[in-house]
Length: 432
View 1 (cartoon, helix red, strand yellow):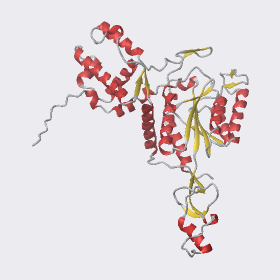
View 2 (spheres, helix red, strand yellow):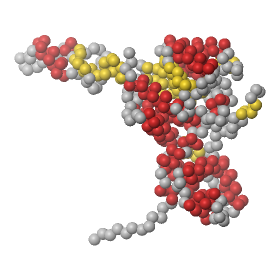
View 3 (spheres, helix red, strand yellow):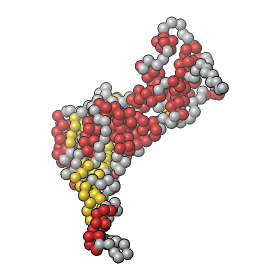
View 4 (cartoon, helix red, strand yellow):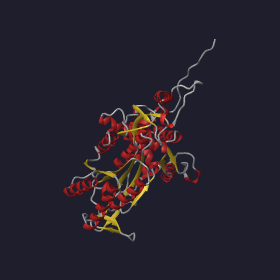
């Protein structure tokens, strides 16, 4: 007879923690926008902008520790030690350090994070004993940087999407329904005669009926089938959509005590996950626009930052239009997230003309020209404005009027819900 002996669990505390829930808590830290180039001196407004987003292992440990404290996953002894209650306890400190190191190891092992080099103390130190060695180990941790992997980015997109749809009361997704019929796989309407180019999804009974009605059954039991006898099943035509998400990277996106760029990045990740899992025929590209416009890969979105830039909306629209026109899709749209007025344009020679005061007639003229070019190309522009100043309202309304799109005046708390609601509405609405 076989017996099974059970012993006391001796695994590490970190192995019992829910890693995905912890990642969810760290999403704001992992997607922090920072300010490219650090602090910036402006001739009119003085110095503004903070430090660049800290991607060091030391900052990751601090963020993990904060998340563990807020979620109540530390032992009472650890909490007392961190709060400075009672006499310092070196053993508890060591337990906290080991817990954080093991959590980081798990994040790396399970493919959520990458590190630029293995964490190690300088000078060959391998132990964390003594004040001097601890300081040197901390300095080494600052030199090692981490980054999100594709799996980590996809996970954050999934969790963001789940949270947004939950807030909207959505439980399922639609698709690009249209009033047209096509010869697809699922039969949803009466069959029709085959035409060149149709998917050969034959309606066998109708095809045989046509052939038998025309010539009957042959003496040898064969059926004389001709081209005109072919009938194909019809299915509801599902269109595909190409989307460009335009993100404003001008200085105002993280000024005035509010980070507006990180929520915008979260929406981009959520849209990417939605399209990849529910609408595989669709595409999503991301364009950032500050002094200039550039397309960034989705893999670099998590580390994207704002900078000491003006708002070159025209350049962003021009690049987005070029990307959309290169794709053979039935529907093309631009989702633009911004919080400011256009204040820059790119001149023919490549020089960037700027006017910090905004609403410059030359800048507006060029911007509206690009909006009109999008409309002529059949590209819809939906603008999500993170400010409500009267002159901005007038500008956005003019853009919507020219492009026949929509304008949404929202804030960082409701931005994702507005964008998801609009995106899914277009998916499920029949295009006339």
